[in-house]
Length: 164
Image (cartoon, rainbow, N blue to C red; front, side):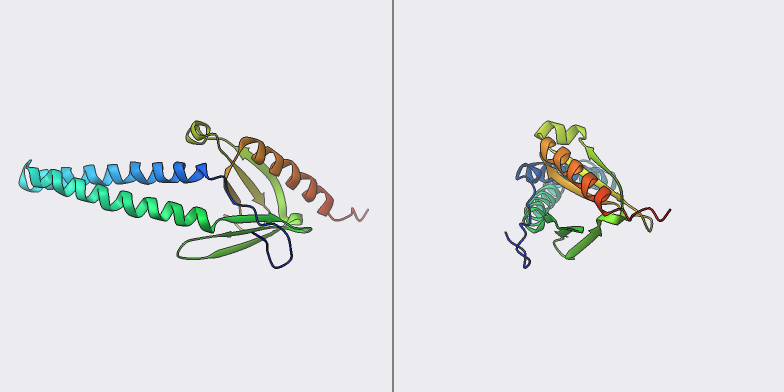
């Protein structure tokens, strides 16, 4: 996909959908179990409690899976001459511009679930207000390392000349 300035907007790796759908299924399983427990607490154990829990699981699993796919389809990022650009969001669309002069440091992170599916996340720490960090999930480990190196070089090049 091309941006209006001709630069390529990069997509996340497709396996991130597997990770996000897995997280949605774990959440759906948890809330399905809570529904069974609540129904059992109120009315005693019955087949209806299991049906309620199963229904909660199916609805949440379906909604979570659809949201994971929609989230993946919306995620894009690009490196421009002076800034990192990100597009994301399903219900609330967010376009973020991070000037390289604001970049403090960059981490390439690989959590246990990401390692399981062969992915990594790049975290860009910025100067400024609290919570100004930018996370780019769904990268290959090599892609996260490469992005980390690129951002490091671009941030160093963007540093203003020392006035002394």
